[in-house]
Amino acid sequence: MKVSTEPDQSALQGADGIFPANCPSRTVLDHVSSKWGVLILVALWNGPQRWSELRRRAEGISEKMLAQTLKTLEGDGFLRRDAQPVIPPRVDYSLTDRGRELVSVLLPLVAWIAEHASEIVDAGPSAGAVTAIVEP
Image 1 (cartoon, rainbow, N blue to C red):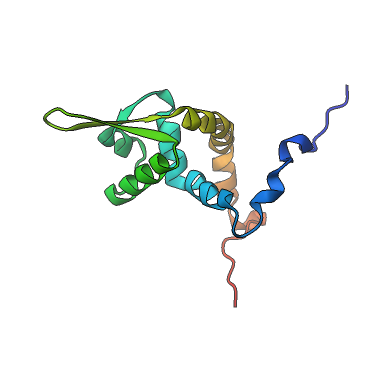
Image 2: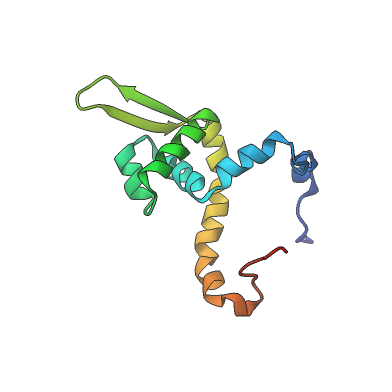
C-alpha cells in the first residue's frame, strides 16, 4: 500500500474563500487561533470551569485579556456563560456544541505543538527560522 505525504485535497475544498481580505472567516480565525483563545477553548474541553480556574489554567493571562477572550468566544457561539444567582456570585464557562466541535479539531494541533515545541524553540534562528520580518 502506498502512503501519500500530500495533504488530502478534499479537506481544502472551500478553503479558498478564506483568503480575501473581507472574508468573515478571517475574524473567526483571529478569535480561535489567538494564543489565549486556543488555551481557553482547550481548557474547557474537560467540562465547565469558573473564572478563577481558567485564569490559573492559562498561566500569564491578565484579567483584562481573560475577560476579553471569554466575551469574544461567547459572542462567536463557542462557549456559554452561566451566571448563577447566588452569593457570592458564581459564573461557570463551558463549551457549546459548536465549541466542542472546534476543540475536537484543535486538539490534534495542540498535541502536535506540545510534542514538537521544545525541539522547535531549542533549534532557534540558527535552524533557518525567521525571528522577525521588518517591512520598509
